[in-house]
Image (cartoon, rainbow, N blue to C red; front, side, top):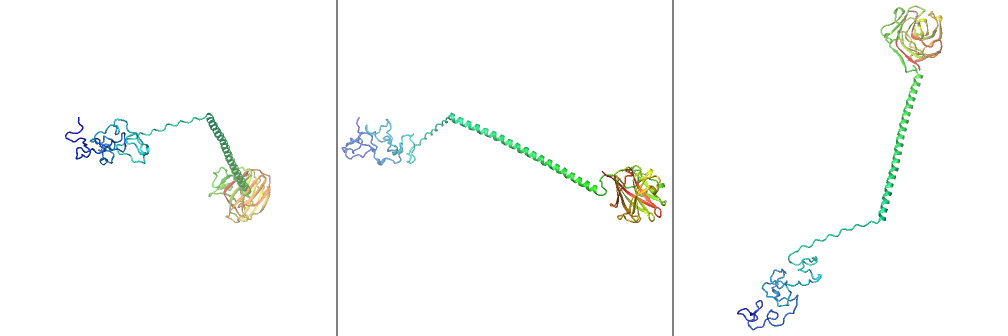
Length: 399
């Protein structure tokens, strides 16, 4: 078969310029023209097609691309052994310094160079690093750690025990201190209370009426206190007008009225007295440690002028001749005159006696004739009949 196309001149190059002379020799370097042949073997700088027709984009699908002889569908096949073999192995990629190989899809991308144009291929995922192999602890080091742990545990246990003992001792000390303080406070309170009680008792024992043990308090309005006072107008002893009255109308005599159910030994006996009627020398007073039915008692009498005497009556005749004077005098604390209220008091302790007027000591005396008995009142005739009124009787027992 003829190599020239029909009707055309010989050596016709469809891709090169056609000479006007059919016998014009072909341009050197063409596929079919004369002249010297290109060097055999691959030549990176050799392009059988004009470079002016090659695009700069480098797209392998663009005509006249520099990536291979088959990039241009209109170019004739190259002569044998004049270019790369499309069916052989790809050419060896240039060294890394020349840039990435555009035909190696798995080549790493060099960040300092511009990547080639064309389709992008996903990179292979990075392989995770192999797991670290745990170190093997030497037996000696493990034994040392165990010993250290045991020592720490022993320190903790011993320290806890010591702390517990100290805390227990502190707690016991606190409890003991609190108990001691409480006991001391109780002792102090008891001592204070005892001291106060002693001081109170001392004050009471040293001051009239010398006791706080009141055993009788009778307003003398009636006979309701159980003392069984003499209550007969015929004998001049009776309750009237919320008070107790004694009348002595016989001259040169005295009248006594007693609480028949009373019996006191050591005591303070007190009463409020008013000499209501009577002439000069009219008097009134007390009887104590008495046995009235047998006319045995101590008798104390004081007149409107404050003159007093104390007698001990020892017989049943009722005459002054059977009485013995123990003490006599004048009480300056007595309010003189008729109708005046005076408080009389007698303190009997053993054979010791003291006489008080309005809580003021008048005199003291000693006698052992009688040790206990009844309490009562006395009225003495003056220059005329005498009437005495008594209220608010009180008796304190002496300890």
